[in-house]
View 1 (tube, rainbow over the protein chains, first blue to last red):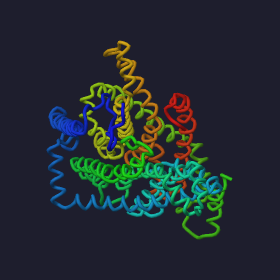
View 2 (view 1 turned 60 degrees about the vertical axis):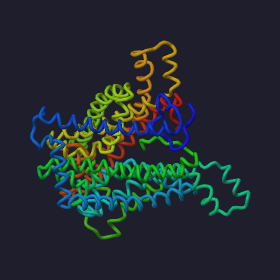
View 3 (view 1 turned 180 degrees about the horizontal axis):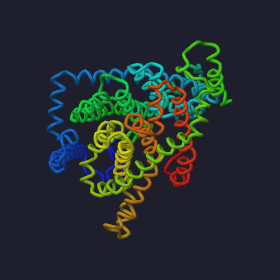
View 4 (view 1 turned 135 degrees about the vertical axis):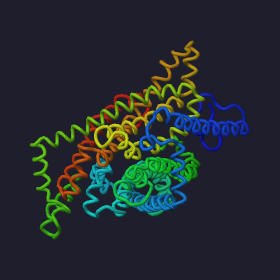
Length: 285
Length: 247
């Protein structure tokens, strides 16, 4: 089966799409219709199940109730504030943690001695699940934003560090030698050979870290924040308004859809897929 | 040489109370944590909480897989249904687990039910997603091979879909347990009544930081043990040997 030109499709179909670009566009549209149908089916099943389950709105809100709660949150101006708060915390921490992980991973990857010194220690820290650090952070800084930011920086640091280190270490020596033979200075070797060659690993590390960090954001907000989407999910239940909780959950999913499809995947596609270095599965695990 | 950072941290930890002045609850001396470890070992609370956590993890893991694998295979068998549901599954998978904790509290109250539900939830959505994707990415060649040797219907299920799904499941095993473990700790903190996560967050309000530190160390060690003693050998014996995963 020949690889189709252009962006790699979401799944390799069991039967290859027949025909050329026009037919392919038709199957893309067909897929969109199917996705909408799937979503519609779930919504219909949900709405239909409400009278069957027969519990109050507190236990089992209907899509209508959730839609009403959504409208309420928008008109009261709560939702936009919560979403922007969450995004701000997320983006700031992810950038800081990502840069730190990249720099340290680079340093450790380039210097064998440093690797032997720090790698096992960092790996042990990585084994301590992110959530487990939250109580300690709360002891140190009380409930609040600092805990959330530190946690997110921590979460994204490790995959970035690990993947950068691995990426740098596995650059084929041939490339380095070739460039050195042409008279490249050390910094040129790093900038023009090692970094680009390690880029697939680095980007994968960033994507993995970004995913974990997003979940970490929601968890930390549930525990230690007074605004934000995670807080909304928790607050809905504590004020007996389960519909708000569901609005929060849906928001969370949509936000991740945005982040993954508008930023992470295109970035991946524009760099490593274009350079033909690797074809990544779309699930981002 | 690898031990140097550990020793440095240990040394710093031992010396800090002598060099700096700070309240005991911010960083209890190592001796306190060790004493707490011995105490919790002796009165059985360490075993109680650790055992409880592991049991909840196992229960959630089994429940999640038991529901996800058959359902995933059933969905994957019909390409049309699979295509319809793929975006929904992707969406649900992105909010699986931790986001459901408050809802779980509504349905099950605080305690085992909520925690096991959250773990089962995240395992379910990640396994079903992997199963559906896995079946869809079985190479066309294999499908044609089964068809060419006269297989139809049930044969396709048993000789193509199930082994393909099995490979996906093993590949995803480490990830799903890792996700389940994270969900366990988080859920116990927010919705638990016992267990490592619960004990850790509960001690915060009593400023019993030695318990917090002990909890963190146990959580880290448990994952390291599970990973090195279970998953790496398991992967080596199956998917690495079958050439499906480079390590």
